[in-house]
Length: 170
Image 1 (cartoon, helix red, strand yellow):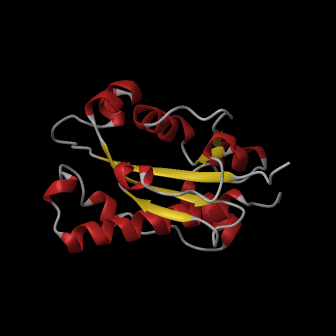
Image 2 (spheres, one colour):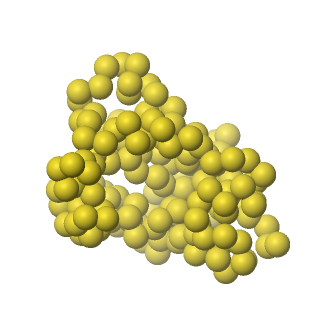
Image 3 (tube, helix red, strand yellow):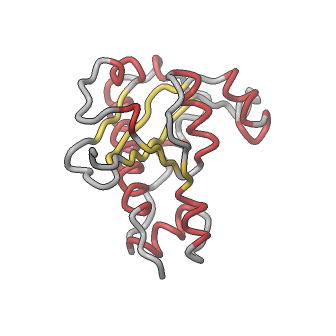
């Protein structure tokens, strides 16, 4: 039997608070209809040195993955959100999505990502400034520097989330 592959998946998608395109305004399914995921990260939770990706959905489709995606177990900090965006782009995973925040709550850690991450890893959560600056900004309007900044943010955020998933019980 092959080793269990657990993947931490984290999407970044277009939103506009002034345009009313956000999960909080529209709800998840209406938002998924009106947005587009411009980049996302995938990190092998148990072997992050083996696989880390951050890029566009088109770039992901071109990869020769070091594991069978059909056998992977998907994880996200907000699994409903990331699962919904994944299934807009790709076939559903065979295994059910798991939620890092739910696991943290089960182990009596704080539910919100910043406090959960700090409690588990001792690290402070990634600065969300780059993400907040994307409010109303389309991916194709960014220059190379802006895209690089977002990819760096997205991958760093996913690596921190993957470390958080490996949490020990308190």
